[in-house]
Length: 292
Length: 335
Image 1 (cartoon, rainbow over the protein chains, first blue to last red):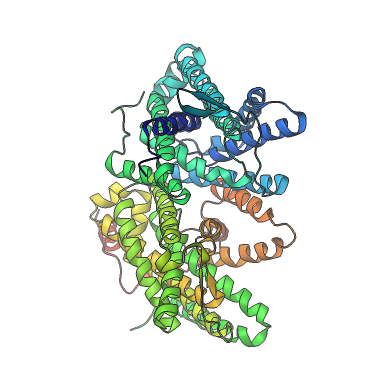
Image 2: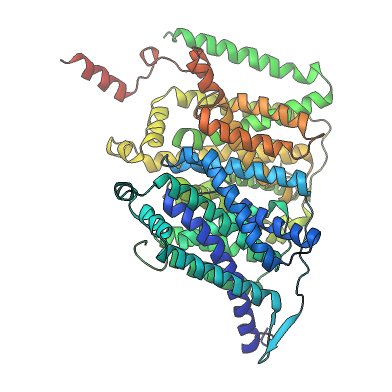
């Protein structure tokens, strides 16, 4: 135990945890947005992620587009799909109690999984892209993890800038704070909903595209990520974007460090255990008292 | 003591059903018996899920965990101690209830979707714990049980459980308990203010809704002869419970029965030719149910003038009238 738990290897594990966590953060930000704005738990979030991942995979394997360039395409496609899903189905349950919305989006997610299984079969696939590694001061990192981390940071910062400085971003934040007041101020809340749901799906798809560089993908991968994203939403404090970002990082690090000490099966439980503990001990989230 | 008139019809219906169920093994081939066994299993599972979700409105998202615990308890008791499988299945039910007490004590403080996600989290935790507890459960290898002569005895066991679940639901629907539970579902805080012991009732119902899947799990282990975590903690089972119950009609006596019979037959017909079509069908059905028929098939039939399908005894004819009803009657009579 002691010989492989050196400082260098621990740093290496934490760094790769940060890379994984940054992807989780992007996925979690998407669900935070949807939940914060319309109080809908989108159970199809992981399925949007899965679709984004498969789009990236097919663009890589069929057309030869590399994942970094495929990302904007899958993000755009999933933005449109998300907006369409909201426009056709989900808008009917906004404002209803959480349970019908949860069951409804779960129905959407089952449908997507069914279609994906029929279309792509149940195989595991991966994108063999940049399989080399970079070594620096005794710490080895795979190139794809570094790249995924950088992309995730660009996305997160870009998303933050969008919320902070654009008119639409301000409208989204206003709606998530006090919906009625936003309406009174002349914000088209219906449009904010559609854009937010689309953006939520787009962020999930971005996370999916980045994950193809690290993990194998398969049609039923979505549910686990829905749960992880939900855990990030809760841990970050419902609807709190900065909190969600930190929670995503925390989950990533916890999982990779846990991977050193535990079996693969047990690592899958880390998210659930963290989720249950958060719900019991600090249901308002770890970081801040109030949501922004 | 005279029973209300509609009660005689309900009892008559029960007898006809019992006779029909009793004759199924003699009417068709083994395939039909097995099919009936599976349908009865899903009636029992969806009916148990209905007890917690249909009445209190708490969506238990990983209800399969109690089925799995029952199956493992049953299998371990049968193989290690040579216990009779009926007794072992009952023990499975009690262990499942004990687990529900632990999970419920923690999760039932949470509301709505927090509860759902937390129960799902627990179901995963339990599944992986069973996988890791190799000395007891043999991990992923699974447990093989001594083979049985025929499935008929297991069929009757399933029939007894399914009928028991439906009867329990019937009693709850037509009692003050049912009224209290519906009050919790519609507005928990208001129910509390009116003196409904919400926490006690919720935990009680959670235990009850875990007990039957536990027993079903034990019987299933004996019937199928081999179990492993993949088989008895299959998330699809949770999904099926949710869909069968919601499609038939949550919080009703016949809802889970109608849902389980109709959808299981559809599933049985489809999965051979279109292996993934059932997921799409189930998904679309969930969307349709939430948007257009929140009370399921029973709700639709009931609103079309076929009220009898709810199997409700009119309040006026009940033997034990709920106090809230008498209070209402008093209030109505005073000017």
